[in-house]
Length: 139
Image 1 (spheres, rainbow, N blue to C red):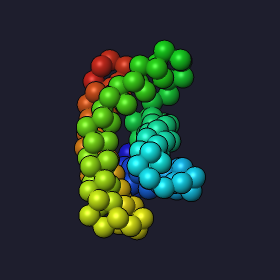
Image 2 (cartoon, one colour):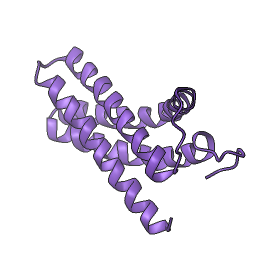
Image 3 (cartoon, rainbow, N blue to C red):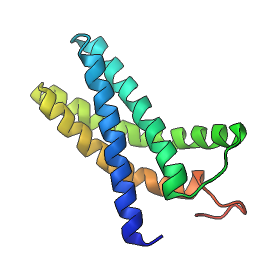
């Protein structure tokens, strides 16, 4: 796959996962305001975005065709672990924007900036540690 195709796909999948993430957040936040709803919205959105991005990346970025439960379990666990630091970037910026401006628009801008930075870091981690070739080399 060419670098241009890789960048386009990865960016498109990041946008799709971001929309899924923020959509879930909006659904949760429609149920009420306050710290509890905010924290639940972030957690639920992150989970939805993570699953969507994993499934897209696995097949269309890293060309991993494994289908066994064991393979998915191992990879999703590693994929999630690689996402811990990048999620901290996302949550930190989203929360900072919310605390500074206290508006939905600025919260979402902070989320988009945080997710963008996080996805760049995550690609490098996933390529190195999660989606390795059958012989254990990088894909």
